[in-house]
Amino acid sequence: MTETLLGPGLDADDHKRGLDADAYRRALAVHAAGVVVVTARSGGVPVGLTATSFSSVSLDPPLVSFYVDQSSTTWPSLRAADHFAVNVLASDQADLAARFARKGIDRFAEPTRWRPGPLGAPLIEDVSAHLICLPYERVGVGDHVLVVGLVTQAEVRGPGRPLLYHQGRFGRFIAHP
Image (cartoon, rainbow, N blue to C red; front, side):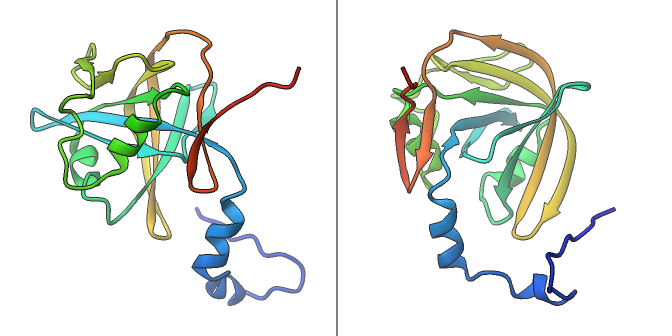
């Protein structure tokens, strides 16, 4: 069941009007987000995309999520895969994030370094962590699909600094002293 929550003074049709797309993008640009590359093998071919909407969902069962644009050319192949990997990018991997966000290129060609994971999904080298996931739930939400995965394996490579996305640019996290 989906429930639409309305603020005070809003009627049932107000959610349809929403904020215009440009103002919405500007407002959300001030929110820093972690960056991952979601990878899978579909029909024997590696596929992947950059996501800044990655999130932990549940501890029991261990669930994570990300959103993908319904018009993504990668989404049909990713949707067809029986599992996927979430590659949590490190602060020095902005070029990799940009590469997997680009259209019309072989994202897995050099200089991308990767290896097949335990179930076959591509695991990108030198990332902070790999999470191997089984599809758990998919829900259309607006112009995106919410993808929820059940984490079956995790490999943490170190507590390195994360890659962040903020105001249309990649950056690094600096801890307070």
